[in-house]
Image (cartoon, rainbow, N blue to C red; front, side, top):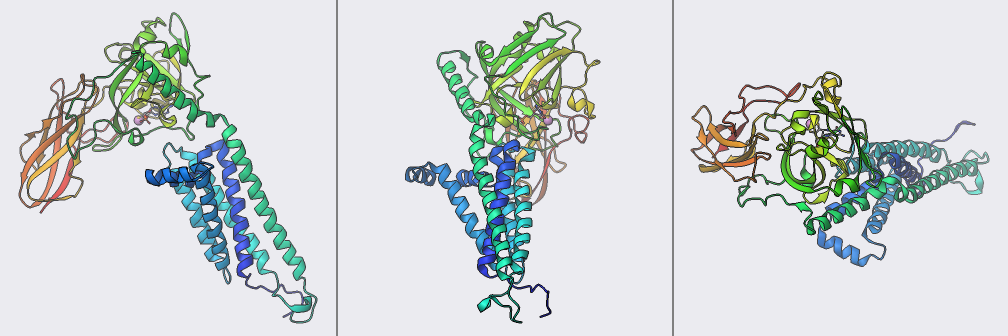
Length: 534
Ligand SMILES: Nc1nc2c(c(=O)[nH]1)N[C@H]1C(S)=C(S)[C@@H](COP(=O)(O)O)O[C@H]1N2
Ligand SMILES: [Mo]
């Protein structure tokens, strides 16, 4: 060995393991810290723990809770940390001749965190950021520490190198140990700091505030202060078909919010202003003091493709918007109701629609009997039956301005979308699924159709170019504000078929068959589905 050359060597399993462990600690600590301003549940460890809890069968979760003194959540977090530490140390120990096992393994662990954060219910678009930063910090730190560890000469007795020079081993070793200790300690401090800060942030109050609002609504309902929605008529959905009421967790979600706004209901205000005779300024208590109603509504997104899933139905609870706005004495010349959210998003609805008491626009506070989830607009959002979400359904609403379409354009109109029009009559085939193989004979086809607020009067199904066959229509709660399930039985011999369907609205007008993509208005065209009958 030539004098002065730094001998490269394999770091033993202990050094490799220590390097990976310290790097992971720093990376995870950084990720947890970055999550604070983004979204605390999106911290990589918090996110994985959350998914573990969500995926644990209830019986097992209960057993874990009973068994754990600290409560299952802390136990799960501790479990995740232990598994992570073992995995990281193992990957580091494997990285002897090359950094590759550690690099790829640690990156894979980081990806698990990112996927957990991105797929958590209510995740915002920025929620992968903490895990991504965590991954980058971990891998970079691991590289640095691994390089230091590789520079430590092999152990020789008497502290000399094989060529007899005095080893600088102790110096290099000390540098490696010091750097590892610094990374590990930094990670611990960051992680512990984040864990201490998170429950003290305003966003941590949203969960309890939501529960409190749900409890309050339950009390109001028990006191008869909520006009209940008509119960679902029996048979509103067909066996094997799509559920009439979309579970809240499956309700489609569309918004531009990079992070889900955390709006404290205690300080929430709604200002009604603009072309009005009298401005209104309401808090949540003022809102809940008004008569509350429940209403079944099917909401749809204008960007839904034919056959797409951006349409859902739930029972909203809220305050009638038309009489509330009437109290502000809107100017007759105001043709637009422009609503604003805390994040600056705006929706411009036709005043004629929102101010029409028969349409039933709501300031909604709950869906399916529970306070709105944060990602669906907690604490208050607007719901206008028959208007697409982009021109009506403002989540986290805090302002309503009476104005004109000539004077103000809303968020999506500025970006090329059409001003509000009536909702297109639309239908969808839900079963059999695409390219499903079904046995020959009687084939049951189910689906849904909507044309809010006109309702659905007829749905027909066709096979190939064959004639239209009337489908059976399920009963719906009163009015046309919801979708309507349908079902048809076809007699099919073996072969490949294309099924199509067509809905007719309550005014007797069939849905537009001409194929048109969403932008600038809603899509039109008849849904089709390929099936294989064997
Ligand atoms: N504040 C805010 N509200 C919003 C949006 C948004 O981006 N920001 N998107 C709208 C659109 S385009 C639709 S389709 C509906 C979707 O509501 P959901 O996510 O509760 O299903 O919300 C509307 N309300
Ligand atoms: Mo939308």
